[in-house]
Image 1: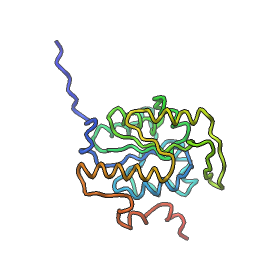
Image 2: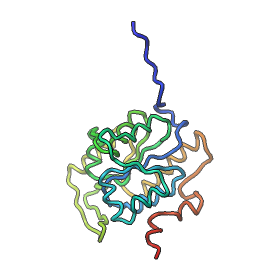
Image 3: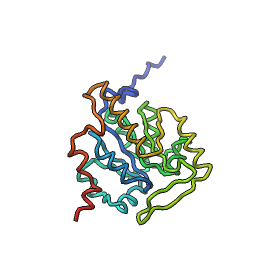
Image 4: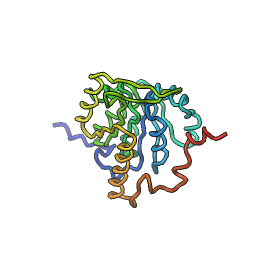
Length: 221
């Protein structure tokens, strides 16, 4: 009889041994600035970018090189999404996908993992690590910002159905606005505080954490 195999790496469900947010960015510009500002205010966060995110972020005032000066940034440069392996190293307690394109939402809802953000989301779920997804196309009419102006979009029924389907995925919280994204992040911070650290929230972080943002730096003369 073969000896039982015991896992030697990763602690699925043991959030007390994890300390950081893994914030994944897709190719969406929908409230991208607001989402990034929330990310900048988190106590410990690393960024995971899709290939599309690398193209879109500079268009909204977030050059990749500037982002790398302040944060650890992981890019989608391998077919197997090598950075996903960090989820086994007891580093990340939460995976955030914000903002998430309708394409990313569809893939997450149907279990497709072929980009860095979708691989992070899928593997996190298998480790019982909570995922927070800010779905862009969640209402019949969506007003969103392009690099040059605000535009009106009308998501298709299939897009709305995929958001509903994503809500049923294990270990996933779907949010539909910047306000509910902030609420979900604060809730997660509170849960982590109960496990191992003093209570903290986005609104109670030191002022310098809120002020030091790439978006603000880009607006300075």
